[in-house]
Amino acid sequence: MTTDLLWLGALALPAALAVVLLRRSDGPARSTAAAAPVTLLPLAVLAVLGTGAGTGSGVPAGAAGAAGATGATGGLVLVDAVSRPLVLVATVLYAAALVVTARAGSPGAVRLTALLLLCCTGNALALLAADVLALVAGCLLTTVAVALMARLPGTAAARSAARVHLALALVADVALLAAAALVVGAGARRLADVPAVVADSPVLVPVVALTLVAFGIRAATFPLHGWLPLLESTVAIPVGAVLSGSVVKIGLVGLLRLLPLGEVALPGWGTAVVVLALVGGLLALVPGVLNDDAEVSLAYSTVGQMGFITVLVGVALAIPELAQACALSAVVYAVHHGMAKGGLVLSVQIWQRHGGGPLRGLVLAGAAVLALAVVGAPLGSGAVAKYAAKRAIADGPELTVITVALPFVATVSTLILVRTATILRRHVRPGPVGADVGLVSWAVLCLGGTAATWYLAARWVPVLSVPALDTVTLWQATWPVLLGLAVAALGAGAVRAGLVPRRLQSFTVPRGDLVALLGRALDAASGARGGAPAGTRGGPDRPG
Image 1: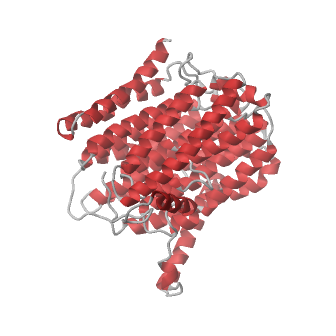
Image 2: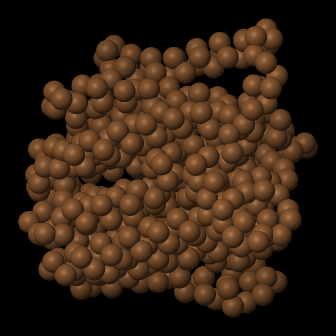
Image 3: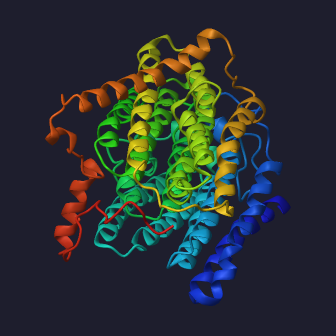
C-alpha cells in the first residue's frame, strides 16, 4: 500500500500544479510554471527504481503475463515490463516539452504548461492503471487535455483539427467504456485478469472489436490515423512531441491489457490487424512526402512506426505461442520510438531557434542521431528495437511475408525524414543564439534515446536479445535505409532534370488524408465561419 501511495502522490503532483496554474493569471504564474518539470521528477525516480516492479525475467508465457507481470504492485497501480519503461519515457518527454515551452515564453505558455501537466497525469495513469476503471479515467483525462491544447492556437485551422480529434477521441472513449462494461460484467475488473477471463467468456468477440477500435484510434493506426498529422499541423511543437512520443503509446498499452493475447488463438482478427497495420505503415509514405509541413511529415512517420508496432500485436493475437515475445518487443520498440521521435519533433523548434547560429553543427548532429535511430540504422536504438521485433516473429514459419515486408517500413521512414529535412532547410530564424536550457533538455533526448533502449533490451527485458555486430545483422539494418536514400536521390535528380511536371511537384495530400473528409463534414455541420481550411496554417512557426 505504501508504494501505491507513492505512485499516486507522484501522479497527483503535476495535476495539482496544473490546477494552480489554470486558476492564476499569466503574470504571477510564470515563475511557478518554470518549475513544472520538477513535479515530474518523482515519477521518473519511481520508474528508474522500479518500486515494487519485477525486472521482466519472471514474465510468464503469453502477453497477458507480459501485461500483468510479477512486478505488479498492490491494487492501485500496475508496474511491470510494460508500464515501467513507458512511464519513464513519458516523464522524460513531458519534462523536455515543459522546458521548451517555458523557454519559448510565448503568449499562453502558462496555460499550455498546465495542460501539458494534466495530459502527463492522464497519460501516466493510463500506462500504470491496474484496473479497468483507472484505465478509462486515464484515457478520458488525456482526451480532455489534448482537446484543450488543440484549441489553444485559436485559429480556424486549430478549431477544425480539434473538432476532428475530439470526434474520433469520443468514438474511442465510447468504445472503451463499452468494452470496460463488458469486461467488468464478465468478472474481470483487474487488468491482470482480463485476458484469461475474456478468452473464456461469451463477450470475447465484442470486447476484441471494441478494444481494437478504442485503442487503434489512440495508437493512430490506419485507417483512423489522420487525427495525428491534422493536430500536429496546428498545435505547439512541444505538444506534437508528446503526442507522437507518448500519447499514442496509450493505444499500445490498451491493446496489450485488454486483448486476450497468449490465451486464445484468433487468427482471423490477428490477420486483419496485421494487414491493416502493414498497409498503414507503407501507405504513410504518400502523405508523408506529399506535403510542405515538417511536423505533418513527422506525424506520418509516427503513423508508419505505430503500424510496425501494431503488426506485433496482430501476430500475438493470432499465435498465442509468440504473444510474450511480441508484446515485450512492442514495448521495446515503443520506448525507442518515444524517445527518438519525441526528440525529433522537438528538433523542429530547436532548429528554428539555433540553426542559424554557432550551434548549427551541434543541432544537425543531434537531429541526425535521432533520425538514424528512427529509421533503424545500425548501432542506434531503432536497430535494437527492430532486431527484437524480427526475433520475436522468427519462430513462425507462416510469418515469412511479414518479415519480408517489415524492413520496408524503415525505407518509408527514411524517405519521409529526407522530405522533412528538405522542408526545414528554409525554416531557420536568422541571428546567433547561444545555448539554453531547452537545447540541453533536447540533447538529453538525443543521447538518452539510444542508451535507454539498449539498456532496456539487455537488462529490463532479458527475455529479448540485442543485435550482434556481425556483417549479416549490420547489413539487414542498413539496406532499408540505403534504399530510401537511393530513392530520394533519384527523385531529387529527376526534379532537377525537369522530368517531373511542375503540377506534380506542387501536389500535396490534405493533412489528415482520410480524416480530412471528416473535418470538412464537421465544419459544414457546425457552420464554421471563414478562415483557413482544416489542416492549414499561416507559416512554419507556431507558439512553443
